[in-house]
Amino acid sequence: MTAPAATPLTPYATLLGFTRYVDRTGPTKATFVGGLRKQRASRSGFNPHGQFVKALKADIAFHTGGTHLTGVVDVVKPRWRPLYQALVPGATAWLHSLGEPAAVDLAQTRDALAMLGDLPVKINPHFGVRHADGRAEAVRLHFDETPPSEESVLATLHLMARHMDAVLPHAEPVLVDVRRGQAHHMPTDAKPEQIERWLAGEAAAFRAIWSTAA
Image (cartoon, rainbow, N blue to C red; front, side, top):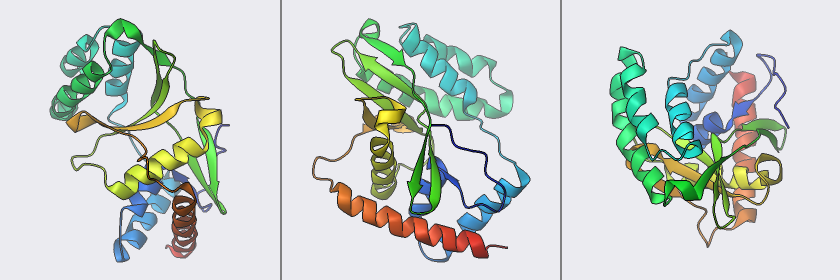
């Protein structure tokens, strides 16, 4: 299900925005939500990773093992070249960890709309991967210089799993730390009910901050 267009004053978060929010503590939460609200109102925002994601998807789809990733560094705008140079080694390592390129295919994912209480959160994986043995994974990429925290990993994977029937049926959610080439999976001892209660509380606080942000 595609997320509806929200008005600037309507509390709303993307998966990235919400998981970054739960990672913060104290007054930084309010500052962060206020920034999201202003960005929503101005409809601003730019994704510098677009060409990178396309290159990674092309390497999976065409079984090329990283040649598109290597090539995109030379064609991206000069201002983004250092960023791409920092991302390519880890992304290539993760790509190789999937096994033989011919044994992996790109799978189409769909966005979904999660409701955490009254807070809509857009669930938007970057792409899906289908293995030769039939296993499928819905992949979300983490680009930040710092590794994802345990909280952001749990929040991301739980919300993706919660809506996997819409995103990519029967797939497993995976969060890939691109810079380090590390794939994060849901811990085997994770307790979904506890995670759900925790996220519901975070969502209620998010809405409260949003409604009072200047």
